Every structure is written in structure tokens, then in C-alpha cells.
Length: 360
Image 1 (cartoon, one colour):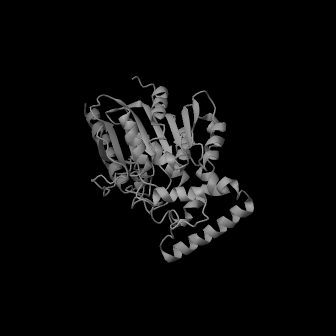
Image 2: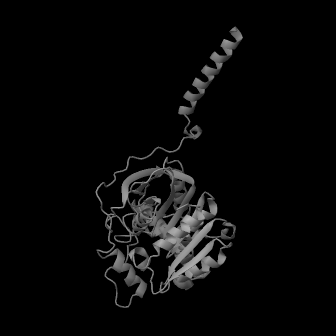
Image 3: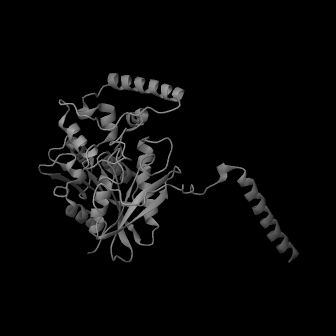
């Protein structure tokens, strides 16, 4: 009996001493990063009207890199039990009060619990410095949203999908490749941000010479930023728009710089990303393992979108009979940001319900 009590006492003392030692060594801490206390706007400040068919609230969650993300959650009024859920983000350089929030609200009206989030370093989400983009961290942001949704009492963890708009369409597919918990993915009016950064629009700058010149300029900018103690911004959507600007630039302006879509926290509406944010997108390539993506994918693109080639080329790489390409007649790139007459919300909802095994 004495030996038994001595063993318990020794074990307890050892645990106490180990705990004390661990407090002095942060590398032994295996806890999730604590949620940052973010300053979240409580009033409705979206660029689209609030629906009377859904309930709305602000939520926060943390990603694997310790960054706290802010999100708007939309829940169908009168819903009960465990629901299918969809995480939404994009466009690249936008905030959740813009297009992603509209998508989330519309899909909530169609029976899903949805969540539109601001990516790391942007909008109301945490992370320093501000307005930094990363192909790795931004892909993680989607999986972190799945982490959060998976443990909610009112979410069926086996019925979670994601949706990305514009640059976040490509990021959504990249996330789905690596995260089989994502049962269905929709990429709307997608970009491949690694391709456009490395090769320019329509692959016009696809050469080692041009990429090396860009690397040199950005590396020099890094040194300058560090010396100055702050990051130079690239500028948002050009304003005013030159008369000879490409049509798609004018279309971007009509959304981000006009009342239709302007938001003060949006980089595209204001002063853009940090200039050096483009560096990692030239050093990584999306979709290397896209042929291994087993779960369902739908790519939605406008017939007249300048970005259509991203969607078409990505779709060719997908395998399986659970992949769909939907081209919207007479729609340009930004029509699929907010045009309720052209965004195929019913078809998107049907796709999610089919591949997430949602019973009506």
C-alpha cells in the first residue's frame, strides 16, 4: 500500500514539475493559438442588402499559423438540427462584405449554414503586417474554416463544402486537393493566382527572362521596405481608368470603385496589396496534384470573362465524373461577383446538395 501511494505521489510530483518546466519552454506547448480579440463591426456594412430569410452573426476562428480570422455566419431562419455548411471567400483583394458575403447569404437562403471570411492579414481578420498574401497561408485559411465548421453543434461535419470567387476560386481548388473533408468545391469566375503572377495575363510574360527581372525588382523592393520600416502598397484597382485600359480593368473599376461594390476595408477598393506580396506566387505552382482530387468540383465562368481560360484549363486537369464546368452565357468576369440574374445560385446549390448528400 505504501509503495502504491508513493508511486502516485511521485507521479503527481513529476507531472507538476514537468508542467512547470514546460511553462518555461514554449516549444513544448501543443495548444491551439489563442483567439485574438478582434475589433469587429457590429452594424450591417455590406455592399448588398440584408436578407430577411437568414440570421446573421459575426464569428472568429484560428488557423494553424495562429492567425485569428473574422467571418460572417449566415443561418437559415427557423433551421434546426445539424446542417450542411459552406465556407466562402474572395475575390482576391476583396473583403467578406463584398461578393463572398453575397454568395454566402444567397446559399443560406437555399438551406445551408454558410460563412464568408476575411483571409489572413486582410479585412477584419488578424495577422501582421497587413495586406500580405500567401499561397500557403491562404490555402490554410479554407481548411481552418473547415476546422471551425466541423465542431459546430449545428453543422454536419460530413457535409462541408467551400466556394471561392475570382482568385479565391483557384485557392479553393488547391485547398480541396489537400483536404478530403471538403466534400464539394465551387470555383466561380476563377483565377489561378500562381499562373497569372508568374506568366502575366494570357501568359504574355511567360519567360525566365521576364520572371527574373520581376524577381530582381521585388527583391530590391524588399530591401527598401525593410530599410524604410514599412511596406509599399501596390495600389488597388486603377482610378481613374485610362481610356485605353482593357475592358476587364474597366469592369473591375465599376465594381470596386463605384457604390455598387466599394468597401473601405477592401484592398481592391483602396490601396491594394503590399507590392512584395506577389513574390511567393511566382515561387509556387497550384494544381500540381489536381489529378488526385477525388471529391466534387464545379467551375463556373462567364462566357465573356477575360479570365475564362483559367477555368477551362483547370477543368481539363480534373478527373472523375463528379467534376462540372458551367459557362454562363453573356456574362463577364465581374457579373459573377454580384449580378443576381447571372450567378447560377440554384445550380450551385443543387451541386452542393448532390455531392454533399443533402436530402431535401
